[in-house]
Length: 272
Image (tube, rainbow, N blue to C red; front, side, top):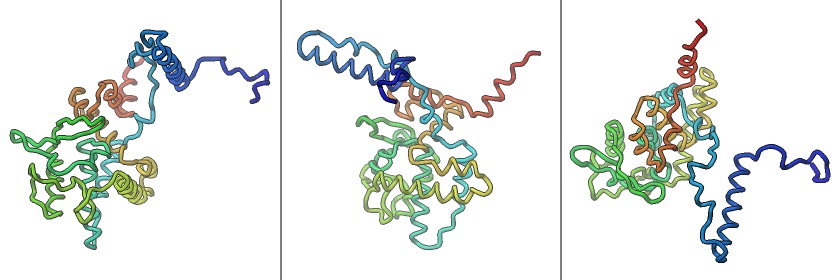
């Protein structure tokens, strides 16, 4: 619409969340200039805490996960594959470990491709993952029993001792020859290929499940893992530690119940 038009009213109504955020950024930059120039002693925009700023409902982050029924269907089809050649078997074993890792340990893609086997350590008869994640921070999270079973199977397939040692610098997830780390791009392609293959297999019987599964990427499985753990009642403090979120507000995004349960529970209220 041309600005000369009488219908052009850019300042009518409230600003969108994106516009407000951009406005704060611009004002903050202007105040920073005045501080640097010596006109002001401080930037008042910095006094606005993140918690006091308006937070939009981010539907994309909340919804990018697989319902339990879709995950279980996906996992069953993954287990039922019957590799015939040596190369197919190698792909199969690596896929089993990758999806076990993504679902059970909730890692980011960058964490999957950057860690070696000795990041998994036994301390006081319990296995832990010493993981360096976002922002270069190193934290310790439990390495689950099922994760250890999956790891032992994958290590034995690769010709390694069932349990990792402190001197084991082999890649956690390796190329098919087992010598080099896979890249984040390789991981993304592995995940997308497998979700595409299985979504096509279930499309006739479960068209809605297939449609959602086909959209899934590596990070979806992190969201899926955290969402399912929240649904299973994992304490919020532990969930925050597992996710390695700085703010508990970020973790709380996963504290939602399944839609049907939510709907049924709300319907308990009636006029009688």
